[in-house]
Amino acid sequence: MSSLEVSLPAAAGQRAQLRPRQPLSLFAIGSLSLAGLLTLWWAVTTTGLIEPLFLPSPQAVLQRAWRLLGEGYMGASLWQHLAASLGRIGVALLFAVATAVPLGIAIGRNRVVRGLFDPLIEFYRPIPPLAYLPLIVIWCGIGELSKVLLIYLAIFAPIVIATATGVRTVDPARLRAAQSLGASQAQLIRHVILPSALPDILTGIRIGLGVGWSTLVAAELIAATHGLGFMVQSAAQFLVTDVVIVGILVIALIAFALELGLRALQRKLVPWHGRGH
Amino acid sequence: MALLQLERISAQYPGASQPVLTDISLSLGPDQLLVALGPSGSGKTSLLNLIAGFVAPSGGRLTLDGRAIAGPSAERGVVFQDDALLPWQNVLDNVAFGLRLAGTPRSQREARARELLALVDLAGFEQRRIWELSGGQKQRVGLARALAADPRVLLMDEPFGALDAFTREQMQELLLQVWRRTAKPVFLITHDIEEAVFLASDLLLLEPDPGRIGERLQLDFGRRYAAGESARAIKSDPRFIETREHVLARVFAQRQRKPA
Image (cartoon, rainbow over all chains, first blue to last red; front, side):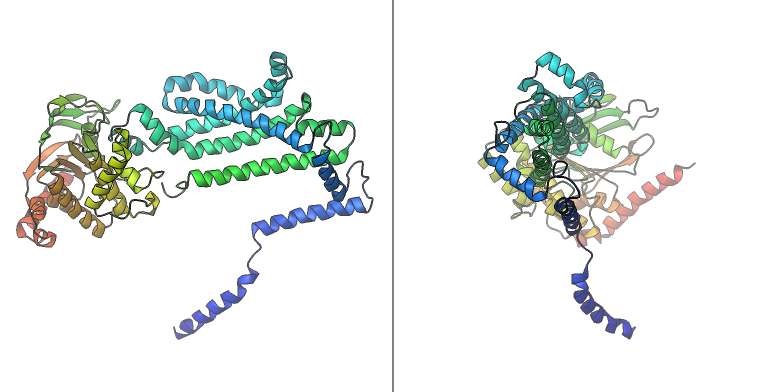
């Protein structure tokens, strides 16, 4: 047994020395992967392996991005295209949250409402939004309404479904506790059901925003004079490849930022989530 | 003061062939601490749910001060086995929740919540988050929350069942002190024999299949503790041991009869 006692402090010392050699973090591996891709891109373009028409060099894309910020493309700066896209998804998200959360609560609480709306939502949800875009264009024209409506429909279903699930899985003991403290139906919803379902609602919004963003860009490919999707589409028609690449990168960055922002919001709004409650 | 009465109550779940409770009559008045003790399947929780108004009886009359009980209400406060606190509120807001629902102004309800936190020995915990509390502390917040709404009777559903033995004894003593100071009628269910004998002023032994009252005992150990005698002295009193053994024998006799 004495050997064990002796080896313990020695092992602790070794561990301290070994610390720098811990396995690479996921973040480090991810950065390596991105850096590798960039290097490969730079290599194949600088050596002239691929023509700039098909793939401009990273430097050229960066320069183009700088010019897009100032002089813009097709009569609008990159900021204006970005603002048009973000405005559309913002309006659609606002309306979707304002309507989907109440409907989700009603579906989760009431059998009749659930029976009425469940089949409708389950019917239209799996249809790719671009499949019914032509119908929306026929009905509502090619103006802003069509685009916002398309994104709204894409965001709406995930939020309704997530909210209804959250409402149905509220801890019954909490409901009873509030009832035995004298809570009315409205107070139950405001003080117990809504906060209980909040983690699910936020997850629904995250999923909805992901779907909505990809739908938005696709919608702008078809009928628009502003917007990131329009910029990419129009640049492609004139073979301005560097603008196409800038547009794609901005679209990806926005999607990434939205996802990170919502995750941070989730941590801030529902700090009790995953704490054994 | 409040008087809760059950007259020939029975209860049956929809679709079940046998009732969960048959022919339950009892009354609970001021200064009483009524404990229902029984094995699982004896309908303890169903009985509490009936009184709380969470479920309706299939027969009989349930009244509080002569008025029939229909649904849950703030006049019957409930303490749950798994605290059922709201994690998006801090300790103070949880305790003040009932008063907030009743529309009491903030300053007034927070002052009342502070008083009750002091009553359950949790002064200084006002701003804590629920997940930062231990099991015993959560149950104290649950007790303070139920009392803050100033109910006419207090219902407790195996409130100390999930606590460790040491904390459980502390909570039993705390409950007796609170009971003496607030003088509220308490209805408590448990499957812990020593807890039942120690706390009860009136003890109901429930028997299963279908749930019914097997025996009623009037005890004074809880009152003696509330009057200042030490818990250890009471629990080593030969009369306490004798009563505990009697109850134990009843429960075992019941269990042996069951397979036959």
